[in-house]
Length: 339
Image (cartoon, rainbow, N blue to C red; front, side, top):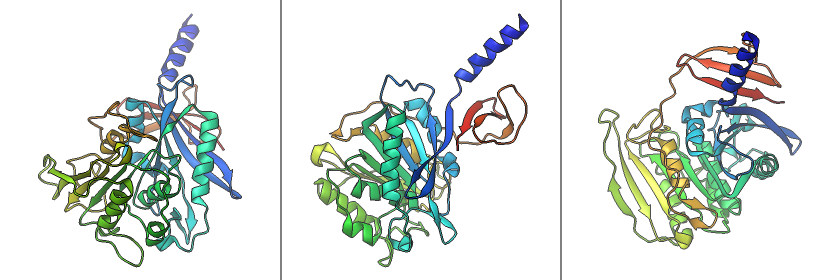
């Protein structure tokens, strides 16, 4: 009887854990890797929104855990995918022009192929696929808005921009809701641009204001200065009345740097909450209203205590098997790394 009780409790414990899977697809003669997080609410009888979240230059998919989009996914009921960039001169990157002009990587084709693969394996709401990212990942999101707008409902860029090559070749097929989050003191992707490799944020915003046919002047208001010690404040500029009721939106972090705001740097906003609250208002056809908003996102400050297999034995990470991650706050996360 004791053995049966243990088995029942174990199965119940596992069933409430979320799935975080390390997977890959073969594209353009390269194994392209990505991480997918599936909320516990996932039901293949229902279609779920999908959010692509791209890392920055030199970063990696695993490192995007700082965004806490897994928590937002579990709270707001969508699937989140973290694609992995390839190496160029020893650095991971997304091929967006500008400083990546020497790249031959077909990232646009990879993402199109990835969306096809995900749609075959999961019930994805094809009208609610979104893209976001940090820095180079923000550039990649703009590239998708320019060249894959038939599949991407809305994008949000944090500290990213558009390269001159992308800007000049941008050819969206429909109005695309845009959220740009950027600090005026960003020393990595300068707010005022550099004509040799990156457009100014004002140029980027004006491109989308014009393309989306938004009002010429933005509605502007200051957000509450919740944290008076972070050396920055936030102003929101929103260009309304675009075609299909889309907007071009900008969270201007005055005094802000190259940060995922809310995790470090400015603490008056949390970029991930702002992004999801923006996305949830739109599908591929335009404005749909408010639905699953997120108010607060906890910071990730928990420590990993140990990894175990499915019978509780402590192990190191392994491939093609179940791993249980036990953290110091008592939470348990289930992951399966598939290769």
